[in-house]
Length: 367
Image 1 (cartoon, rainbow, N blue to C red):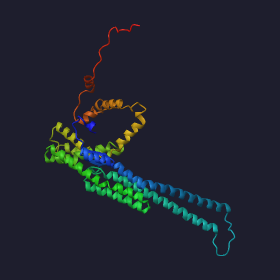
Image 2: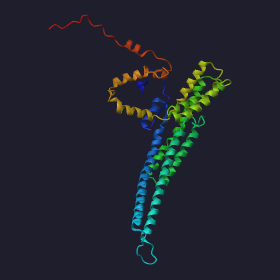
Image 3: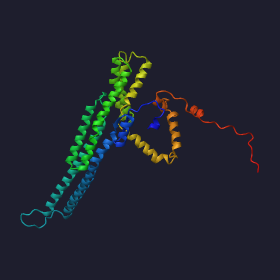
Image 4: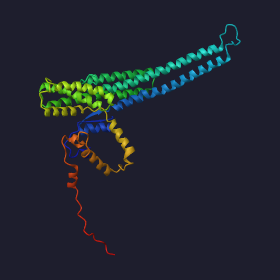
């Protein structure tokens, strides 16, 4: 990190990773930054703790229900083949086939009910894990309002309590219960991350020295709108449409006549929008997508395309950061530094010694 940050006019304010002790110690003692827990690793612990064992029990219950139904159908087929002629029996005794048929029907019904119960429990756990991810957002995705740390922590703990009840009801092992407790220990850090982001946003907005109406509009409407648009980009077009529509409803009244930002110049409005986008990106809740992409590229592309050589990979990284542009015409370096850097090829020409022109005509070695 020291080598990567050397010469850069920037400061690391937070990191997002798993709970590896080495990473936590480095962020706290060397970088002096805030550590944001990775949502993916919390959900993954819950999946391994409950969803995996429930899936095993669900498969076993499905197999038992199928076998019980097959035995029932087999006996029913035998009775239909034998006809309705009653077998000889002693007085007062019920037919053995009928008793067996009733018992098999009860067993098949019990096995089917057990399968349905476990399936419902597994679906409940899946929904709780999904709602946990929906709760851990800087902005309420349905109302478009900022959320505070205690409220988010309470919602997350409610989902974990629901998962723990299912685990206890199904009699899962102690190791599964310990995994749930391990995931729950991260909740205070998730709450601290929301409080850190809120404090950092307030500090940055305070430095802009805005009037109270403009400052309130930035906090309550513009930053949430930018955050909703950012979340919408991670979803499908149809899935992100409600978020984009809500963001538009939050932003549009600000710039209409009589709005809090209507009196600002076009340049000031653009600068305020840019500040809102940057502050909306302060909240980072997962790094797993970056880790997964890097792992996939290393496995599938680097060796096959000669990118396992560090020198070639460094050259392509420089081209990606300083030369390739998005649809808006900006490079990664320009977005990072906030200003357009000098031409990459001009910098290369200034630092590379051009070899002299060859002799004309070239001299030939005499044999």
